[in-house]
Image (cartoon, rainbow, N blue to C red):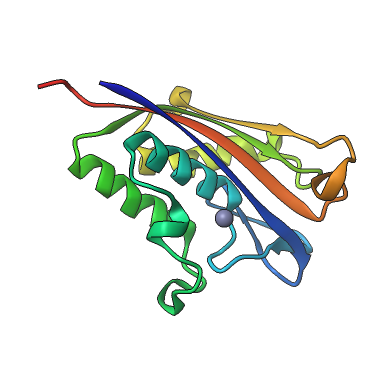
Amino acid sequence: MLKIGLGYDIHPLVAGRSLVLGGLAVPGPRGLLGHSDGDALVHAIIDALLGAAGEGDIGRLYPDTDPRTKGISSLQILGEVMDRLKADGWNVANVDAVVVAEEPKIAPLAGAMKKVLCPVLGVADADLSIKGKTNEGLGSVGESRAVACWAVALIEKSDR
Ligand SMILES: [Zn+2]
């Protein structure tokens, strides 16, 4: 059986936060604001996985009102979501993601992000795609006030 899911996330880009994106600490003057580390790419991937599995979304499983998850690493959440999927017999076939940001530039970071995320997702390098786009100066993303991410995930399990 194959199932596909779509995820979307956006976080404000603000001064005085360290930037965590795609599981990477990215040096720079500004970071993503959020209850967790604000990793919008990992959040979009998580929502794609949960959507494919019919398990709701990250906001339902990890509400931003829960003090226990304040500052939590999104990679840790991704690991827990993968454990949940694996327990139901799911494997990830592939994930394709788009990061929409004026900064940082994604292409030079994508390889390192994949090295972090592929082992957690249990996929080969070729089965995770991370693409960068700008928003052509339009709107909050285009004005570098936010980073938005989209992801689709295909998951599979045997029909036994
Ligand atoms: Zn988020």
